[in-house]
Length: 131
Ligand SMILES: [Zn+2]
Image 1 (cartoon, rainbow, N blue to C red):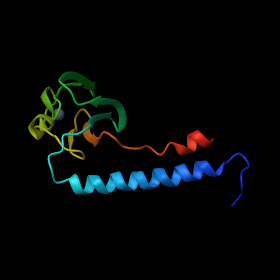
Image 2: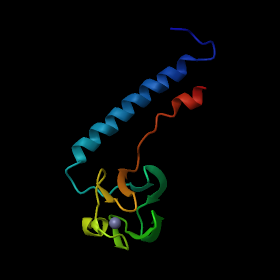
Image 3: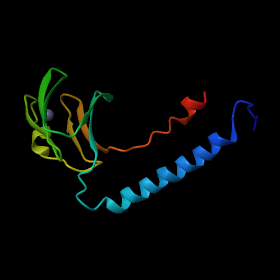
Image 4: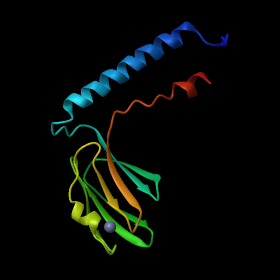
């Protein structure tokens, strides 16, 4: 292990604290998972495997155009669903409402995935800070 003179001990303390915090949050999520927690969820829209949008859950309508199809996405503070779509299979519409982290709506013809994620994900962007 090379020791960088730039690193102060305080950073590592913070790193350990952050790790503990992340683990605590992860555990909490596991515990809360079974309940209808409508906390800070984010709808993550991916097109062709590439994340294109992150939408906070609030009353809103979004039009997603991908693969030659148009999906009308509806959001409320607790749910997300595809209200209508001109894709041939309509699977995305039939999926109905999703309201929990980890659930997703997939539209294969348009290659669109709408996935719900817990809002407070602590990204370990520590490396960027140190570098
Ligand atoms: Zn569809």
